[in-house]
Image (cartoon, rainbow, N blue to C red; front, side, top):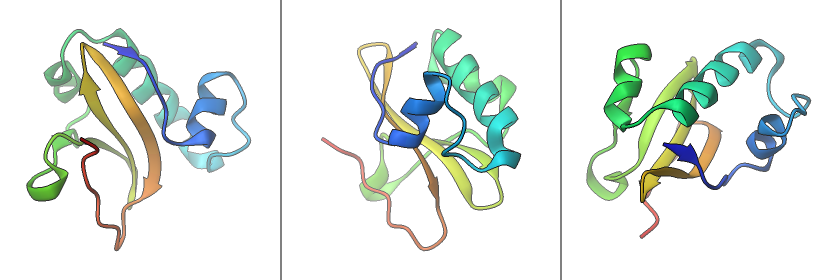
Amino acid sequence: MAIKSFRSKALKRFWQGDVSKVKADHVGKIRDILSVMHASHHPQDLKAVFPSFEEKKGSAAGVYSIQVNGNWRVTFQIESDGAILVDYLDYHGKHIRAVK
């Protein structure tokens, strides 16, 4: 499942090699998440590596998330065997919605 698009400019820059816009203690975990996501064939492959992997419910149905640390998550949607709208955010108090 290739990474096709980013919502987060910080993650896009990270993917291109610039780690300066993400929290320093998150660099290793984000690198692992993006690498596994990019190499996986199905979203459920991520569950085997990241126990925090989950699909959101309600208005966020179709949004997947993986915990980075504490409230911080990498979220994404899937379209045509690729991850789209890959985001990096502090979940606390945020209302997440799927983009249709």
